[in-house]
Amino acid sequence: MDNLDIYNKVKEVPQNAQKTIQGGRLNGMTDINPMWRIEKLTEQFGVCGIGWYYEILNKEIIEGANSEQIAIVDIALYIKNGEEWSKPIQGTGGSSFVAKERNGLYTSDECFKMALTDALSVACKSLGFGANVYWNKNDSKYNKPQNTYQKPVQKQVEQAPRLISEAQRKRLFAIANGNNEVAKRVLERHGYEKTEQIKITDYEKICDEIEAEISL
Image 1 (cartoon, rainbow, N blue to C red):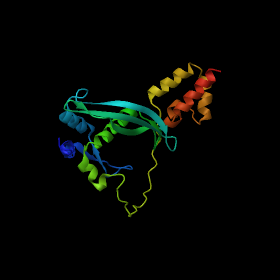
Image 2 (image 1 turned 120 degrees about the vertical axis):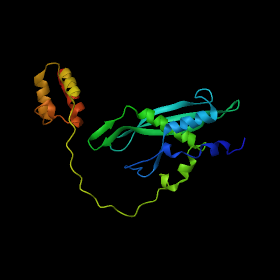
Image 3 (image 1 turned 90 degrees about the vertical axis):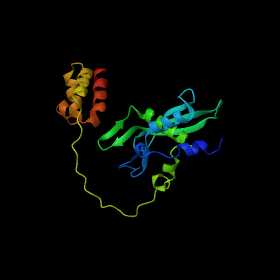
């Protein structure tokens, strides 16, 4: 088999599988639809589990800056060439578990799934998947040119804080278990008179304090 046979078959990504990232640190770079990789893996090697598969080697949460946490997944991808299985093709991916957003910290329940998708893309890159996209220097986070033009800083409009939902209020009442005095005392400590005023960023702390005082 020609050494570049697989590479040449998977290097081009159709336009309908590409999307330009808007905003954030990766603004202007290209995101490749993960299902395109699955389709090409199946096309080149066969059904998942028969012609190709991956093993999860490691899953962990690591601490980042500003109280953020990152989910990391390490995989080994295996492909079948004729009757012979490849050596493991390594891939490491990451995704935010706890991210600092405008309204406070946000926890993602899909972080490991997204980190796995990222790890598979890294392993596939070693085979040439999407090579034409990665060759474009404007699509590489390592080669992206620095823009010397500084956009004027725009005054941001202060947004109203997110308040807790009805379901979260019911949970708070359930934790209080009818002990309104304790609930009232904790709310006043945080500057609230009513549960309808509670900000989402204070909610878990208030629940923990109510539960702790009731258990005394």
